[in-house]
Length: 370
Ligand code: SF4
Ligand code: SF4
Image 1 (cartoon, protein in one colour):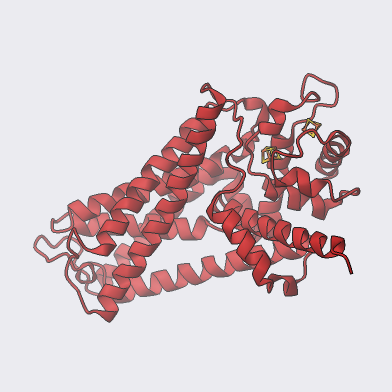
Image 2: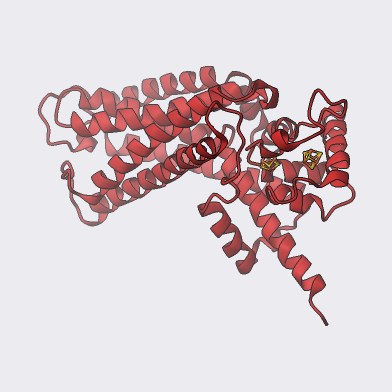
């Protein structure tokens, strides 16, 4: 159950905004709001996850503080989102720990994973500090250690994300059967991959608005596509190793290295840019309780990229073993934190865009002549 004070704040916001409707052209939140007259917890949770916190509405609002209505959509939606991250999470105590101590929990996980993987590698004959090798990392960290670690961590993370998404879907009032809607999925996928609505964005930083909006969009793009590129690189690397039987260090001109390098650079530029822009935000519209969660996500992405690029350059030196363990521990910690940290915003926002797409197609059917 949504805390009474947060429910009241959300309903107050919607009561004022639904009477005013000045912001209706800004983003999907306002168009979706206008199709409702009653705002229960499920509606607030859905709208909060549809919001991407650009703050355009706040800067346009005649009822924002110091007006007595104290309308502050980005902050109210951010507080509601933080509540939903814990509500949908499985297991919930993990989400609470990440929310309260994001960076500390992240670092602790990295240390535990380094300790467990290095012990397992020693026990299974891995040669972590060998000085001459051909870059075949399975001679350093045994295949068994990597496969078991990634199978356990990957399965846990995928399961937690799936459970979280299904909890979100039911909580916002949709049945599982509505997930099988190809047309709505196609529209939502287009919205997701084009980062729809990120063209607006009065994020209150010191740049002129147009410039800041563009920068925000490009840092999001760098992060999103950097992540995708690294995922493609990892998949291609596995294909080269297991299907094509190429066990040595891949050439600098090979596809896994090219995708990995582009992705790694994107995941350095994007998250650091987003963090710099976040520091410039107006504190009035930020839910500071989420700073630790944001910082831990950004630190992890940058740490993965830097350790990955170092691994590429130093892969035929004695540093490879230690670097590989550290890099893999960062990657696995990212997997483990995905269902609880900032990453999960992407999952629930995608779900909210899918619901928005479904709502539009239902409205079209109602309006269509018999
Ligand atoms: S945020 Fe302000 S201007 Fe926008 S719809 Fe709400 S009350 Fe109106
Ligand atoms: S902060 Fe931006 S995305 Fe969120 S409701 Fe306001 S205009 Fe829409």
